[in-house]
Amino acid sequence: MMLDKQAAEKEMLTEGPSPDPQILEISPAQKAARRMEKIIHDQIEESNGASEIRNSLFESALFGTGIVKGPFNFNKTLHRWDEGEDGNRTYSPVDVRVPRLEFVSIWDFFPDPNATNIDEAEYVFHRHRMNRTQLRSLSKMPYFDKNAIRECLMLGPNYIEKDYEQELKDDSRNEEYGTQQFEVLEYWGVMDAEYCRQVGMEIDESIDDLDEVQINAWICGNKMLRAVVNPFTPFRIPYHAFSYEKNPYSFFGIGVAENMDDSQKIMNGHARMAIDNLALSGSVVFDVDETALVGGQSMEIYPGKVFRRQAGVPGTAINGLKFPNTTNENMQMFDKFRQLADEQTGIPSYSHGQTGVQSMTRTASGMSMLLGAASLNIKTVIKNLDDFLLKPLGEAYFQWNMQFLESKLGVEGDLEVKATGTNSLMQKEVRSQRLTMFLQTASNPAVAPFIKMNKLISELAYSLDLDPDELMNDPEEAALMAQIIGMQNNVGQATGAEAGPIDQGQAAMEGGGGVPEQPQDLGVTGTGGGNIGTGNVPQSGEAEFSG
Image (cartoon, rainbow, N blue to C red):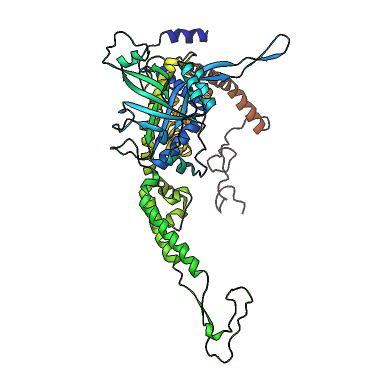
């Protein structure tokens, strides 16, 4: 009966805010956004995207710019075993289409030189270094020309290692290393429609020859391996470039190393001077008067060495000289420029374990204040990641899922991607404590009507790394549980009211030896026993005086 009532109420739901603030609101758009967020997180985790992003973050901090490619289509093989009626298992793999991320080194990425960000780039080139197996595997991918790949394999490797690549790898092997590889160029950008038709691409007849078309092309040497129209809807270049510190006049940003370059050079100089000085001051230099020694002796020094002197020659034949030690002065300058490097990079030493002798780092509150101030510069970096990596990457994943996801998505319309990297800098422990304190404040009856309790509990679950969908009831279940709890409370109150007089009588019998206790009348004089008091002692001449 109650479930039928709930179903009838569901049909009467209308769009808009709830007229009763105590009734939980239903947010289908928020649920769809949460569902899409979970799907994207699962896709990144399954494709090892977190590792690829970490590699690009390393290059961003080191060189100033990180590059991530994706999401792009990738055929993943699911290893599945089927069990037959006879109990034998057979291997039956299944290929599924999934999105994938890929780390791209800035040394292999060549954007439009006139662009200052990826949105302004008219085209980009991505250089691949492949062996024979990797080049052959391209023939299994869609729209690749197998004959062109076969010709490239017959012509032989064409990769020539650049000078800077040897420096990056710190590789001192001979030049023949790496000669068995192929250089494949991947192009994403625009091309004239006329030329696209000449190379055999299928272009809509409504597009004029002078119009430009977004394409993707793969080239090895002088052979075109693939040429197709950009498969993404809407058109986009599937690369994301983000800077550690944004340079508004250049595509490439500024990294930690470039920020502290001047201070680092001076630190290296003082460290080198300190070591050179220790080489001199750490050992003894001898001043030898050879005329005072017997000729033909070895000047080699070792423990227990004995020198023979000329008899009767005055003075000391061998004197030890010690150079002054200037290591302390050099290390003081080293520490000074280390502090300047902290200011230049915005990454103080105490943020990664160096406490020093500062008084504020000796207490937890003082350390928290220092770390909070240090996080201001880090928040700027995280904001760059939000704007140039997380937000466009989330939008690209959303568009890919809407276009290519084979399973049922359950999301309609458009979703706006909001990157919250800066908010994650607040420790989850601190956030959960604040939410708990706010939850205690919301228990005040005067404040409770103004609080969205379901939203508060949901955020508290997220701060504790819990899934609120698994722990919380939906609005229908919450309303049903509220009615059940209310009915249980009413039954409990009714049972308590009926049992109250019986319990009181039993308690009275037990406390008075079988007679209910009554308030004792202490009388007028306060001595108890009725209205007759003890009175005063009779005096001489009064009645009842016996002498």
